[in-house]
Amino acid sequence: MSKKIPMADQADRHALYEASVQDPESELEFVAETFEEIIGRPLKSIREDFCGTANTSYEWVRDGESHTAVGVDLDREVLDWGRRNHFAELKPSEQKRVRVIEGDVLKVQTDPVDAVLAMNFSYYLFTSREDLRRYFQAALGNLADDGILFLDAFGGYEAHQELEETTEYDDHTYTWDQYRFNPIDQQMTCKIHFDFPDGSRLEDAFVYHWRLWTLPEVRELLLEAGFTKATIYWEGTDEETGEGDGIYTPSETGDADAGWICYIVAEK
Image (cartoon, rainbow, N blue to C red; front, side, top):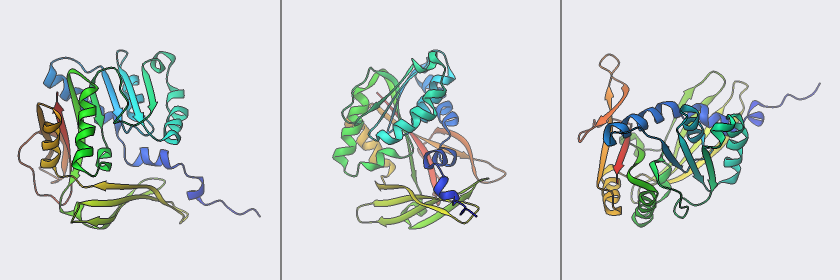
């Protein structure tokens, strides 16, 4: 009898990541609606920095015939996965409106876009003020005159702890592992693991070395980089459940929750 191959050995870490972490439809809905509210015209072109599989870019060009997207990332293996699994599924007309570039977001210059997106806390990999300011300056330089930079951020008192959080899905369990945190310099190591019904585990599927930036720091650096305004969009609370309601609005006051995620909207 042949030995059964563990589910972890057959797993695709990128597919699991997209299923567990990303929600490009909701993210793009927020970005498009907020852009139009602020600028007064529809969002058409985006640049997705640290794009990984470029899932969001591909979703954007599928979402409208006038939409264009550029994705930028250093990791060829991840970009190639996106090309095989997403780009190949696009219609020819959609393929013409998306471009994926292997390169450094600090150096790659592209045609000006309406919105630059740096989501999933990807800019946390810049661990010094100088480097993060340089990234914000680079993003500013790739925006149209009325363009907007969209970021997300997380925090709360549990963000400073070494802990694991698990989420159950139909065919796997997702674990977010805040493996190490240094309160002196705010640097942290975070990992993602996946567990399967047969007891096998995909350990360290993704590992991140980040600085846990505070919202005042990010806003200050955005203004130092040349943005005219940086607004926090805070999630509202469902009165019945006490949980987040998925609606983000401009705010100068946030709840001191154990964990929160917000958007930062920086106008050129």
